[in-house]
Image 1: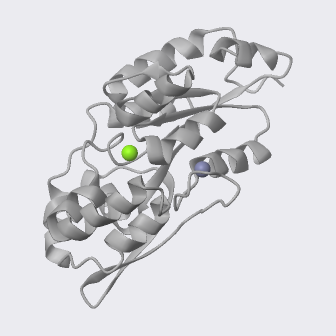
Image 2: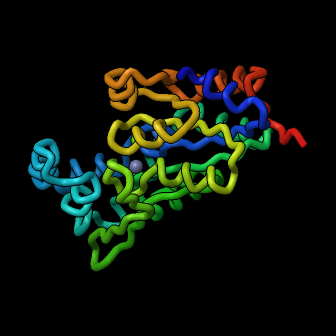
Length: 240
Ligand SMILES: [Mg+2]
Ligand SMILES: [Zn+2]
């Protein structure tokens, strides 16, 4: 079913747009966890990824192997976070959603401590769901945020699960998910009404013959969402 069909199938009840967006590699240019892992636990990371590719570990089990206990001095983490960059359209997307009163939420398989710090550094505000990170004697201690045994993704934050939870409270939602990673974003797009994809997520969707909108930066996404809003296939304002 095409995206338009899916929207029209529910045309009898007004749909309200809601936007969910991945963080690392999508809202941010860099991927915080994997960049630091390459620097601090390179060997452990390569060994673990080999196990993962043989199907012996879930994505969250990989996180535990690679990131739990990772020795990153707090001042090094701070210096790294100080130099990461937002996607050139990240603030446009936040501003657009705010102006149109469209709910926006980051769904991240990354970590709360880093996201909180980046919100401070960039002086931006948004709601999010993520995994948990704290320091213990100079090393990372991590815990999953919203694992979902019913989904095959095996991540710490099942994005489909978060989207399903949103739908349960907002049955008329027309859900958009924006992402870049086949591991953490695929189930999010499958659970959404419309996916925006780049990088390995786009490849994974191509392989499965699933419709999505391609993008390079979030500026492209804002442009397309703006067009979508003008599309009569669904309503954004509550129709009551
Ligand atoms: Mg990502
Ligand atoms: Zn999932």
